[in-house]
Image (cartoon, rainbow, N blue to C red; front, side, top):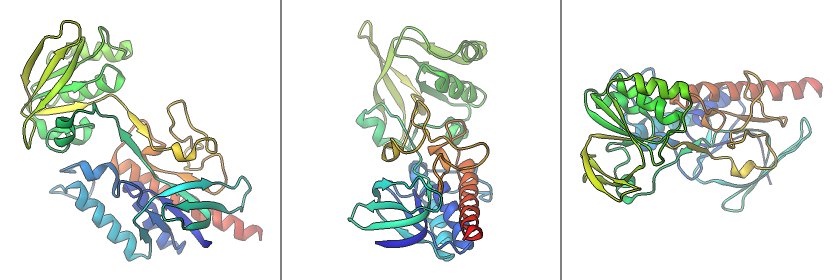
Length: 314
């Protein structure tokens, strides 16, 4: 049984930032990368809105730089994922971790940075073109489609918000809604209706994404009549929601109705002592690399103060 001070689960901007701060505080953190080392940013070709990169940077390169920075201060980065967690409910208790290789770890503090995964349509051509015109984040990638034609898929608040944002950048935005009504709030629907360059197609789904290396169009299908037609576009934004990666913690940590971890006030503290959450796993509102990094910093500081409080009481 390996004994450590701080374990970080997840390797996106939140996890690596937590590692940098924890390592600098001499907490000797161990970080497990998870099933997708680097998180969602590894599927992003260009990151233009993270401070400090005036010329932009591609997502995978940015994650490698964050990893190197975390390792420079002494973080033990391990490729692999955690398969089982048994949290202690007592302050000062040890949390028990099992990893995929069977290794068992006891740790005083855990920082959860497992992120949230965007939901996609499941079409092979869509998967092939992620990063080549298929995106799940308009705020992240909308700039690349300035004055171009794009499609947003979804009928909820997320889709309406993405479309409204894109309408200020793109020439025309088409929303594809698979039902005969949008389920977005009326306030969001009003925003959509007020934008002169947004059109909505109801009872419509994506049948195929057209293009070999980049998106050149979509073939859409009316699910009432079966009619198909092609639309020329350069960007396809999937806005059908995200799923927080929290299944591992079900039954132990407090979550909202959609599975996002609940943190206390402005802190990263969960309902259990010594357990902290940062990044998209607890943030359903912003889901940006810079906000994830910010909460990673907060989680490391919260973990450091928690450990200090244990020392003060001993």
